[in-house]
Length: 242
Length: 398
Image 1 (spheres, each protein chain N blue to C red):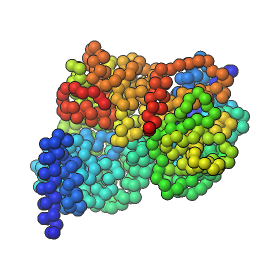
Image 2 (image 1 turned 90 degrees about the vertical axis):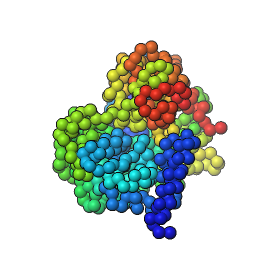
Image 3 (image 1 turned 120 degrees about the vertical axis):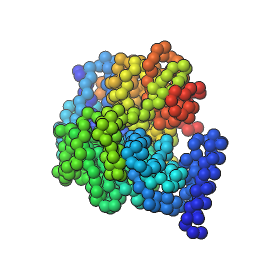
Image 4 (image 1 turned 180 degrees about the vertical axis):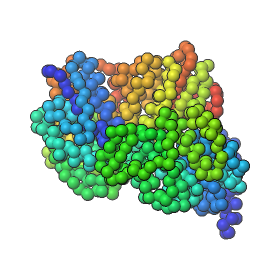
């Protein structure tokens, strides 16, 4: 394929939790395969390009989250990109705003972008904070994704929706899926759109997920091994509570 | 029991606990003494503060150095005795212990944890409160920057205290928006990485210059003092300390002031590890890492990072820091989260290697100088082995 374009959305607003590193990891792993790749920064109030390949949205505070949501709604570019087949990775506040409904900074439910079938509520339960371990769905390359979660909202994914994985340890979406059963879903996968609560940044801690996103837009990837990445990912997996 | 008697018993019990703690080798005993004092007399803080001139220092970065600095200026610039915090014990117990140790000292300069500041203002009735800065730190504990700013904003409404603030930080300007007396100091403006939106109204702020402005009016009030734009983080904090000392009644000669701001204390500790001296700085969050990285001059650098509670259990923030100042240097990563740091640096193209512990890192370098940056508990581990200057590091950096 021609040049691969990665868009980092509103880093100034949704950069509280280090998720901007996801862009650097994707760039690093793409370049490691000699792919021609560029990173486009989109600042608040700049228009969102509609023809890029991968869009990254991070976590942030409630106020900036609401501000980002309104800008994306008015801009409309992200919708067009998703309809055109672009991949999206949205973390925490970014994941919540892709959904159908979420609380604003005053706790009042507002409409999300509706790009994925997931709705977020605040409950009186304590904040979900700590290491998160997830058994991936539809990814045979690893038995475990890991991340660090830090969120108040609980997210219900719609009936029939596929989570990114099932919680092994931690909170994840914090609410059971629509199907009965004890398993708690983490995140969502809807076409090429992925939402997750995992920080870390998630792609630094899970090279397999980074490659999965790259492959979803660039096709089969050439082999690439990074000892620093693998050593880090393995160590975090070993931290799973026994 | 009468109030004074209860306080006296509390004080004696605290001293005994402190001695026991020292004998048992559990540290210097300040915090345990404070806990015992507060356990015996819950209103001890208020009683011990009565009739004394108290200044509190809070903010994300620079509390300990600024507190030490302010205490020094007050001792040298007045005829009064000064009590002050030691080793960053900045919560209720540590503060109680300082107040108790020399109850007749008129001045008390206290470092205060951000979350405890409103309660300490209430209990201690300080004359001056110095607010240094607010940026993201220990997200799992403190919460987001805006939560701290809101807590302060809602509490700082009286006119019986004077706030001394760096007004270039919009979170501080918002924190004191309802306070009666504020001394605003500007350093010519500085982009704040966490303040894209206004802490007051939530709209996008205008950062098109180095300063901020917002349609809601935040930041429109002029600063009373314009300080040198080129000052480093410690230098900026030194200016705040000097102005706070003046408000407390100290006389600070102009040449002393110039000297203090230009050679502001930078928290560097010299450790001897594997026969090599390592100049080590403490860095706790993205902002303090940026400051420390800008000070690095050695070709050999050790980074030691842990993720225990006080370090922040989430290491994602490592990706918020630009490590360009490390280009062209040889970097060794150690500490419990050495792999996090090493991977982050490798992605930025920096020459990096992972080693098991601090001593091995120092031994790996065959020339000096060597500089190190350590996260909070990694630094504490080094300090526990030998407080002060150039003490031997014998154990592993666990």
